Amino acid sequence: MNGIKQFRKNKQGFLLVDAMIGVLVVAIGLAALAALYTYGIGVMVSADRQEKAVQIAAEKIELLKAADGHSSSDIDPLINSIGTDETNPKSVDVDDIKFYFWVTSKPFEEYKDTDVNRLYYVKVFVKWSDPRIQTISLETYIRTKDKRQS
Image 1: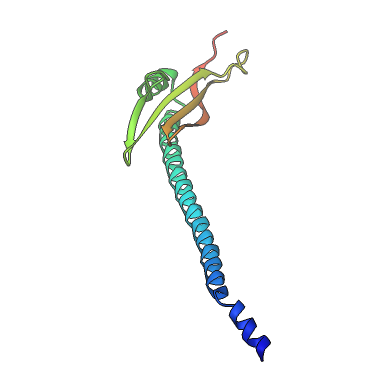
Image 2: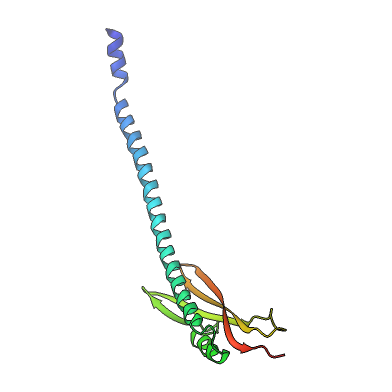
């Protein structure tokens, strides 16, 4: 009987240590979940901004594709209306984010010795900050009804 009383005296405070370790383990787990949740929100916001940038670029590509089959004199003003200057690009505000866009284009030279319709290679760039600078580009070809000159 003396041994049991001695054992009980030595266990005093052991329950408190167990509880403190349990609380510490739960706190570490909750901190990890909070960090994961915060990271997930950041990724979701970044993906939303990237989707908006792709939509802007797609709108500009569709504007240019509407001129497909027209003469280059119809296409050149469209390209200039979108903007071709990367150092001073045009911009649009979407949800308090400023997206800058510009176009590069050049005649497609693969068929220069044939009598086929002229092709323009067109690339639309969209740039924004998220918080670092991000850029996407979409590219396409536009066919004109101009004939190649020999």
